[in-house]
Image (tube, rainbow over all chains, first blue to last red; front, side, top):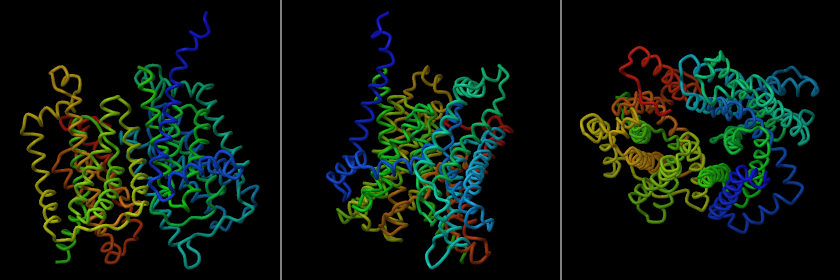
Length: 333
Length: 283
């Protein structure tokens, strides 16, 4: 058989994705030059982000929460459980981590404290996911809105802690995680890649993954085959919550180190949502896409001083995802 | 008299939630959901401040804000109704992109513009519009052939199509109206509630609360307006509740969000008890 013919069907969507990526990124950067950073600032920062060692390493640091949220969400979205709760789950994971290390009076040694916080943060996220899943399964409450509302609830609880009980000194800021507890880029990448592989194995090599996929494609078929839909939804709700919670731990130990009140959520969870969509819910592709989105975040942060609002990073990423979706639809016709 | 004062302040505060929610009622009644309300509101808030600065007129700022909402809703129309992309994904993308674009525009130097003063003719006009809009929408939805068609499209798309209704056109119209009301809502927040200022995070989840009040008000224009007003009371009486009743401020702040979650669970219980009250199924 002609190999060219065989490869043709798989090539077309790739072309669509590439066109979409480039067009969306270009459009977003051109729009961004409205800001005081200007077009020159955008362009030079773009080159710097992908060629200098410092931003490349920082990209790997910021990758943690985005990728952890995204790979867990691929499982949830495969089961058509459209949670947006990773934002709140990340925040809760980071709150729990800070509590364990700085406010719990346990004074754990780093070799115990770090793994414990990863488990604890993960369970905190899983708990939030469980609440959303429970409401969906038993009273059919829409998971998108419930999870979004919880994001705001957690954000306000964080603001309350940072400006009230956990505040130190004259400014609304908490204690910082001690140097010995902080994680470098290598530890972040190892944790992230392990979670990604775990999700990938679950999805592609396990019975459970098959159940998720069948349920997502045809819930009724899944039920006639004896797959319990409640179990599947609750499991993906908790799994995606767990990975996002771990993302929160990586955020706290990797680069955030303390908490202060914020009017807008930092957005790592929303980036995870976008990444998951961009990757068509494939954990391995999601890891790659997380790296790309993390590099855009580094780009945005580097231009913050010259006047690009950090909130625009999510807009750049949103425009890219929409552009890819449009290009894929147009090239698949 | 304190209570009356609070009730009227609460109404003035809840106007953006009521307006945005009423637009979303039409969208959801026609069988679609636009989750981009939060982003459309933020984007139009920023545009209204920028345009009022450039023109010196808060009225033109308000109109521009409405148009900004329409522009973002057009993205939804083209991609969801035109290209049949996933409505949930596109809606959330509009929310995230709208918030970022809003910050971008204000970063070009438009943080303080001209405000619409309380008690001005323009403000009073907006108050009157918000009061008369729910009954008018109720009349349109339940007492005109166009309203019946709109609800038919939301009730069963395929039957409506077979009956010769222009499903896509009807939805494009409701989505555009939803964009307009969300746009005016965002402009109102910036020009009235925040005295002509824009700052990052200005909408603070009110767009999501508007979508929540659509469910809380059970997809009925008057019910939705009452629900949005109730949320407005919760948002406005925070100082009263914390100082007079001694409730923790954080608890009061998160109450509206919790209320929406409770409402979401109640809707299912109601529709199980009364099958005649089954809501449209946009989500």
